[in-house]
Amino acid sequence: MPMPMSSELRDSHGGDAILTPHPSDAGAPAAQPSLEGLHGSVPVPPPSAGFWRQWRAFVGPAFLISVGYMDPGNWGTDLQAGASFKYGLLWVVALSSAMAVVMQILSARLGLVTGKDLAQACRDYLPAWTRLPNWLACELAIAACDLAEVLGSAVALNLLFGIPLFWAVIVTAFDVLLLLALQGLGMRFIEALILVLVSTVAGCYFAEVFILPQTHPDFREVSRALMSPGLGETGMVVVAIGIIGATVMPHNLYLHSALVQSRRLDPSTAGVRRAIRFNVIDTVVALSIAFFVNAAILVLAAMVFFGRTEAVRSDGQVVAFGEDTDWIREAYMTLDPLLGVTAASTMFAVALLASGQSSTVTGTLAGQVVMEGFLRWRVRPWVRRLLTRLVAIIPAVVLIGLRGDGSVTDLLVLSQVVLAMQLPLAMFPLLYFTSSAKRMGGFRSGAFLLIAGWTSCLLITALDVYGLPESLERGWTVIVGQ
Image 1 (cartoon, rainbow, N blue to C red):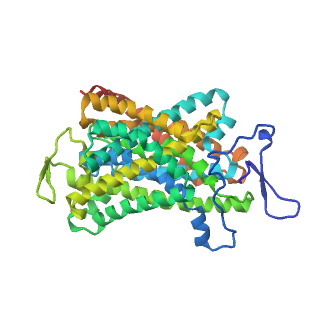
Image 2 (cartoon, rainbow, N blue to C red; image 1 turned 180 degrees about the vertical axis):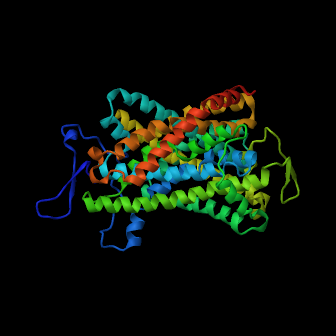
Image 3 (cartoon, helix red, strand yellow; image 1 turned 120 degrees about the horizontal axis):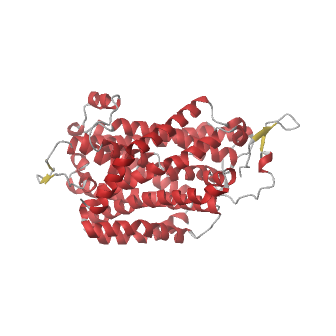
C-alpha cells in the first residue's frame, strides 16, 4: 500500500530512499483509502521482471479512464462538429486530447506520490471553506456526465429494441444492477471488459478510415484542418467548449488519482518512480486510442453528413437531413459502408450502449471518490448510483417529454459544456499540488509538465470565459426549445 509522502529520506544503510510524510501532515487523521475494496488489490511483479510483465500489471487505470473520453457525450459533440463544420473543429479534438494526456499524467502522479486522490488532497491541503463548493461542483459535473450516459443508453435501446426514447430513459435507471454485478467481479475484470469494448469500436473506425475506399478521407485536407485552428463560424465556440468538456473530464482527474492506487505499490523512491513511468505509458497509449476514435467519428460524420440534405443508405433508402436532425440517432450511417444497414445499426447501438454503461461504472466510482474524499461520507455503491442516475434522468425525462425525441444531440452538447465550465475547479488544485515540492518532494512536476499543464489550464479557462455568453444563450434555447 502506498504511503502518503512529501519528502525523500535516505535510509541509514545507504539503500534506496523511502518516502515519508511531510511534517505539516503529522498529527492529521489518516484518511481511509479511496475505493477501499479495490485499494491495493492488484499485485505488482518485482523490478527484475521483464518489461511486458510489469506493463501488464500496471496497465488498466488509464484504459478505464479512457472510457470517459469515448462516451456518448464525446460521440454527440464529435458528430455535431463534423456534421456542422466539417473538419473545422478537428484541431480542438487534437488539442483537448493532448491537454487530457497532460492532466491525467499529473492526476496519476499525485495519487502515486502522495497516496491521496485529488479530492482527499483538496480536503487536506486547501482551506476548509472550499470543501463544500468543490464537492457540489464535482457532483454537478458527474450529473452532467451521467445525463450523457442516460441519453446514449436510451438511444441505443431505442435502436436495438424500438423502445420509445421517453421510456428508454426510464429503463436506464435499472443499470444499477449492472454496476453491482461488475464490481463483484473485481478491478481486473472491469478493466479487461472495457479494453475489449474500446478495441472493438476502434477497430471498426480504423477499418473505415484506412481500409474501406468509399470512406477513405482526403488526408491532406484533414491535415490542413488540424494545422489551421479557428472559431470563426457561428456556433463553433459552444461546440468547441463541448468537445473540451467531453474530453478533459473533471471527474476523471479525481478518479485517476484513486485508481492508480489499486496496485499493490512499493513505497520506496524507486518503486514510485517505476509506477509513474508505467502509468505514463498506460495514459499515453489509452488516450491516443481515444483520440483516434473521436477524430474518426468527427471525420466520418463530416464525410457522411456535412453539407448534405440527404444520404442514401446501402439498402437504397434515402434519409433526409435538416437543421433539427438528431445526429446521434443517425450516426450508425457512419458504419453503414463497412457493415451494411442492419449490422451497422446493431453494432453502433451495442457500442453506444456499452459506452454508456462503461462510463456509468467510472462515473459511479468517481462519485464515490469525491464524496469520500471531500466529505468522508461513505454510502453503498448502489445507493450512490441510484441517486446520481435519478438526478440525470429527471431533466432528460422533462425535456424529452416536452420537446420530443429531437432534443438528444442538443442535450448531449449542453451536458459537455457544463463539464467544461467545471474543469478549472479541478485543474487549478491539481496543478498547484503537483507543482509543490512540499507535497510532492522530488517528484514535483518538471518544466515540461509545469508549462504544458498551466498552459492547458489557462487556455481552457479563457475559452470558458470567452464562450460563456454564447453557452448560456445556447443552453436557454435547448431548455425552452426556441
